[in-house]
Length: 429
Image (cartoon, rainbow, N blue to C red; front, side):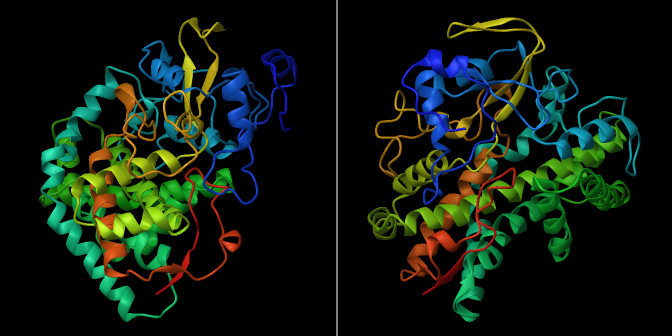
């Protein structure tokens, strides 16, 4: 369904459009155009998702910020009415949250898989256990180590075949090596966990595949936590193991947190590295400024924020369910109603960002919602920012002739995944 209406009433009286929506051909960096129509004419409206239900879709930036800060919305995936991304997520969440189907101590029935899908006070309790590891000062102290990772991978790429796949040779290994070091996961096993996290991120993965994948990855991490219970080390797995020892976490909860960190620490950042590079290659004036001013920390930080705004790698919106009736923007959302907050179109809201469809690394883009807002905003955002700053200040300086080695429209974009990006990206120099 494509909307060409100029009036909100025609949109609201139509059948709810299907969500997620299709991007326009030839515009891989932009949100689906229908989202912009809805933001302009029906910013809070019903949409139909895979299971036939009709949650509310929220498209305006300020409405999303208000709702994300509202304690009357729940992130708990076990709450009736929660609008799951896909049948895989629904079935996997419901089975894994209730049957303890991987090694480790069983948690209470109907508990969300990870604390990011819990509400306070339990969300805050578990989040506090690892917050210090992602404190800005502590993350900033990692900059030399991240710089070394980036330089080593660029050395390897330059010494290897030309053209090369930027995703496989660089974008995936950078965050994988960093989060493995933080967690204490052997990078030698990266093929195993990257394959498994990619399957969990795919919308075409079947529920049976997802359950098997989750069980295998959880069993792997459970084994590592078991090792830390016997032989502690200086890593986050040891921190989680210590909370198991003190009974502040069940072993299953510790495994779920480790899996969340391993998944979140590589998937979104890897996609941002590749997609951000592609966006700069397609905007050579912006790329030239990054190359010329690669030593300007402020410009590089601004570049990171603008690319986070412009690209919005998480696709499919943030999912919530109302615990009470909520009035917002003239719409009544009833208790039990599901909501989808589409951050990609909010990040292109002209009420907040001038000329929002233009990539402008000099703009102040810090109000973007890529990392969310409120108590559930991304815990790892300082680490993601650091990694992207090091990548964007280094890659194009060290390989100034970097170019796409294929046609843009020939790239395999991740339209079928939870996080947007490219499956592969041939580059030459």
